[in-house]
Image (tube, rainbow, N blue to C red; front, top):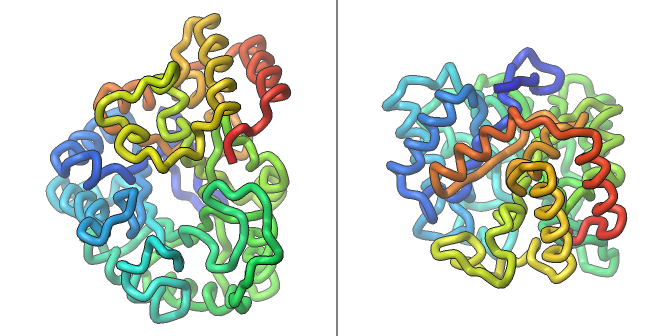
Length: 346
């Protein structure tokens, strides 16, 4: 395994992070525990979850993923070996079954306390805002629609004050963003620069893959200059970058077979790009999945690459990507494809 540090901290994390959003929906608790055991044996010490998981969200399964992790931590007594990240859900139509969502003081405090109880721990290493409260472009929306009514009032100072209080109480150690834009990221960073007693956002968890390199437009410069590390999610583009859906195949129990509305990475142009990437990987003796993950691992702004799997075979291949070295010729081939079909998925 290879390791990095969470920016501005002495917390050493594996460059492969174990994602958990299928646990409780596509994976049983027994399977989740098997994945955690194997990942830790391979040197993975960084787990990422969220109160909203599993995905797609469902009232009856709310926060089951955190409960699975909490039971594993209690059983194995490995809390001190794990860097644990979770997230608070924002307001949305699909989160109405969750406690009073949003980022007001009471909501943040109650969300943290509930996550701590489910995770059976006294502290969370990295606490993230899952997505912005304001109207902006995230979850596959390419552009910002200024015409959409937005009742949001700037509450970033108040959010950071609440998070500061939770840090001081020892309930969370550090804070991060997710699904954020360059404007939002800089707004949070500037607030903590001006008011130095407020906590600084140290990571941003956004999508990044061969099919979606939009992080490179604006946010990569913010990441490098401000030292706010990317936690890349969907590096396999919902499994599309395994190549298993090519030719119209719908594998049994596969994510997009079960949940076809998750079509963010399934457009005609995305499929065309996937075919080209698969051919390139084959020319260099790699599987498409290995190449896709290894590419993300090469990025200078990356802190950790969040992998997810529903089978142990997938998990093993994903973790092994940390040892895959991409040649200069292969990287040039990736850039050539990217130049002709840039960011086919938002």
